[in-house]
Amino acid sequence: MYTIDFNHPSSLYFVGIGGISMSGLAELLADAGFQVSGSDRAPSATTRMLEAQGITVFYGQKAENITDTIDCAVFTAAIRPDNPEYRAVHEKNLPCLTRGQLMGQVMKNYRIPIAVSGTHGKTTTTSMISEILLGAGLDPTLSVGGILKDIGGNMRIGHSDYFVTEACEYTNSFLDFFPKIGIILNIDEDHLDFFKDLEDIRHSFRRFAQLLPEDGCLIINGETERLEEIVDGLACRVVTFGIGNTCDYYATDIRYDEFGNPAFTLHDSAGRERAVVLSVPGEHNVKNALAAFALADCLSIDSAAAETALRGYKGTDRRFEYKGKVGGVTIIDDYAHHPTEITATLTAAANYPHRKLWCVFQPHTYTRTKAYLKEFAQSLSLADEVVLADIYAARETDTLGVHSEDLQREIQTLGHECHYFPSFDEIENFLLENCINGDVLITMGAGDVVKIGENLLGS
Image (cartoon, rainbow, N blue to C red):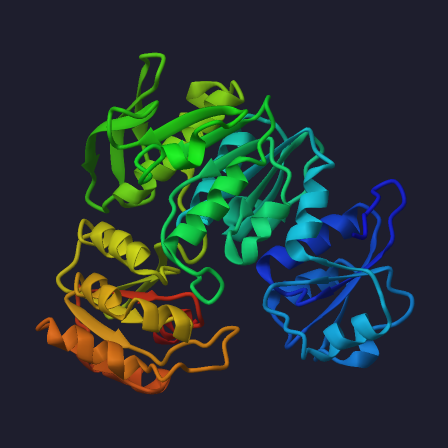
């Protein structure tokens, strides 16, 4: 495997440089003196930001972009063997790394690398941890899977021993990481275009836990099913969190303000109690905060500083993000694209002031839609009104014979009203005619459904 050397920077080419994680790595390595370039399908705010920093970005992935001056090419999981740049790299026998392999090598450059894993909640929890480390003045390097307003993007380059990143299980990329502290928020069935089943996923998370060194720490959701299969025999220290009082860190007296933001009493294994107030809604964020507090204690961060940081955290782009109001209708956007996430978001939204709760959902990938058709129908039925867009294909080309109308029928079978429109224009016109003053409209999904709310707001 090609090894990057921070003492002797080389030339790196990122195929898919506009991706949220790839762009962050490109920015970090360019700052470290590497000659960084890359390609993407089309210009975006992210690629324009990279160009402003002097990074060359090619639009359109073409074989001629791959030259002999490149020391190593970096690929995301979305890049397939038929990609012209992928073929050119291999025809030239150029060294190459996956994004996960490169991230793992970067982590070796820090004394305290922290990796946040889990099927759901990685970006929010990474953001919470980021706010705590920043508030404590620890000058961390941060790689977040979303736009964190306080750092003005998804990457912050610090000058300390602390490095924080998300650790995604897809294609087992997190198994190439080298964390000192690992967090497992939850283990759920997802990415079934790669994993065989839930047991296969659990096996990968067990392997992730085994990466932690003897002087490291695993912070894990203590309510994980068959927890002992993940943690038994680990060399590192294990700390649990959850709602139940059998965990090392747990919450009681959970209550919500008029916007659905929780406050609770935090208990830890030392018997301490702390009053915590959050500015992001939902019980799922109570659990995310518990993991962040456990991490803060692991690093001996002042408790008051951690509490202040989390009280001030108001969310990340596309995580229950308030977008604005039009005609008295509140528009919120959320990245939820799995039934568990949808349930968490819509349950949180129930505590938000509203007359009627609308959800415009864009299913993400044919594989996920087909695998969870009934579960999607159940979770979406928590909204008063459901509107479906076409499935966002992402990396997939095979439709598997599934369509948004199949999900519409499942929802209607439950006796719930559901509307489907094949274009965003039709959805926007329907919403303009039917949403009224006092309603809350959530655009939901991991694709480009956010555009619907932004178009309604005229932004």
